[in-house]
Length: 595
Ligand SMILES: *[C@@H]1O[C@H](CO)[C@@H](O)[C@H](O)[C@H]1NC(C)=O
Ligand SMILES: *[C@@H]1O[C@H](CO)[C@@H](O)[C@H](O)[C@H]1NC(C)=O
Ligand SMILES: *[C@@H]1O[C@H](CO)[C@@H](O)[C@H](O)[C@H]1NC(C)=O
Ligand SMILES: *[C@@H]1O[C@H](CO)[C@@H](O)[C@H](O)[C@H]1NC(C)=O
Ligand SMILES: *[C@@H]1O[C@H](CO)[C@@H](O)[C@H](O)[C@H]1NC(C)=O
Ligand SMILES: *[C@@H]1O[C@H](CO)[C@@H](O)[C@H](O)[C@H]1NC(C)=O
Ligand SMILES: *[C@@H]1O[C@H](CO)[C@@H](O)[C@H](O)[C@H]1NC(C)=O
Image 1 (cartoon, rainbow, N blue to C red):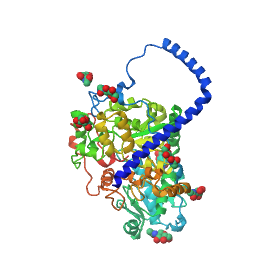
Image 2: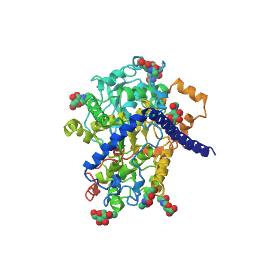
Image 3: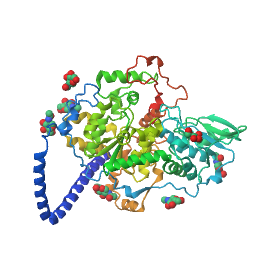
Image 4: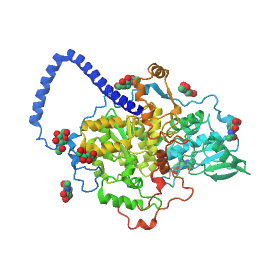
């Protein structure tokens, strides 16, 4: 069977990588040692003496092992199953088992972002029809709104309309009153795109009637021409306003339109100056702590977990608390937590993320920046992750209250700061598949395939369950195997598959050097590593027109459900008897999951 063969290939390849790494290092060390032998013996003498002095002077050392945190008495919320039973001595503190540089993808040199227009693409002044305006109201959290802004520019191009700078959603769950120019650099946005689409700050006073409607989900070029364009032909209408503008543009468009999307997303949309400056300050502070850092986008809020219908081993207390939150949405049917987990629908717990990172080779000396909202179970839940990665930072720990004051009461500005630190990180990892995870994954591909780790939850699930029955080495090795295709390497999905913002393949070009190598040995290691099938398991098979499989659609719908016929209402009667984790103002279902 071909899948068998593929798997064998993969295992051999990993083996080879590790072997190469070891051999190379060994060789280098031998050569250096040869020259340094006399010097080294003198040095080691000195060191021994120093050590003796230090031992004599130092206070008695505690006998508690470093990893004692893992056996914390978790009488409250237990996040990982069988926490007490865990054989903690098996979790190594050191990383370094991947056999290659953890901080870069060596294939990245062969790819580059390319979003220039072809000469078929019409300049703004060639296609913009006078007195035809497009007004856009975005929806959701910062990153969902970002997809809306990107798609709005393309919609304006398709319609030959002048775009009015999109209005941000100020009423969503995230309740941020900031306007466009307070989040993004509005002048740069307009100037950078001036060749492509005419953009103005406000609808002119003299413009005629505004007609308001919603574009269908995943509408393509034809769809805009048949569904939206005719509205401009109505009497006196000069402006069409499209509301709730998120995911209203197809993942598949002609090449020049996809390139336009990338120009908007990766070049035209930059944050406003105050956000940019603070973001850079945070990045600098992380860099001062160590040469490299990991950024983790952790979504583990009570709302999110309740919505997911997953169970994290917290017993009756957890079931009661999350169950109470779930009841707020009438239309949310009961889910089987076990099944959700098997289907890879459950966000990894903080501890699971930590174990995955350790298995991938990141040691306990690595500095980690965590971007997260309220974490269910609070410090207790985070303790497991902090035990694995003691150098644990957040924007609150590396910046003062005063510095954050101008941002902290605006959720989108805070999210923007996290966006910058995550984007600049050497390795970005998420425990979820939300909008921020997707957008950043795409952006990092475009700018040189900076490593981006998305958990392969479907496969990791079994490993976490069986961990007690395995040696650490076996566990780690299997984690590394199932994560192939989920590490942000080039070509993890087939062209035309996956969501565009996550996999902007039309905007990623290959160097001629790379193509030559591939042609020469089409059965070579680079190819087997890059077998696009490996990353497409989530998407392959029953893909529909848009390149989504059933599973992916399932998730996408959850993230941006079509509520045109009846928004699921929260049951307000339940508000009183709710537990302490409940906030007085429960958000709508769709808004929780749109970040
Ligand atoms: C990438 O690294 C692996 C293992 O270190 C090596 O086998 C492979 O040849 C490298 N690829 C390129 C293109 O350098
Ligand atoms: C955890 O602590 C509680 C009291 O804080 C105690 O009753 C319980 O026996 C402890 N459990 C374990 C496993 O040590
Ligand atoms: C934990 O694992 C180590 C090494 O695998 C083993 O020697 C030890 O006996 C185990 N301890 C327990 C309590 O299972
Ligand atoms: C894209 O266009 C810019 C300026 O118009 C140019 O500097 C750049 O080299 C072009 N990139 C590619 C890949 O053609
Ligand atoms: C937009 O303008 C171009 C160039 O004039 C034209 O070819 C195209 O059909 C127009 N499209 C629409 C939707 O008006
Ligand atoms: C955005 O908000 C700022 C500050 O409240 C205000 O000065 C600016 O005029 C607003 N811009 C728009 C386009 O409403
Ligand atoms: C671990 O192994 C034992 C004995 O082989 C088995 O009964 C148990 O179900 C296994 N546990 C898991 C989680 O696989």
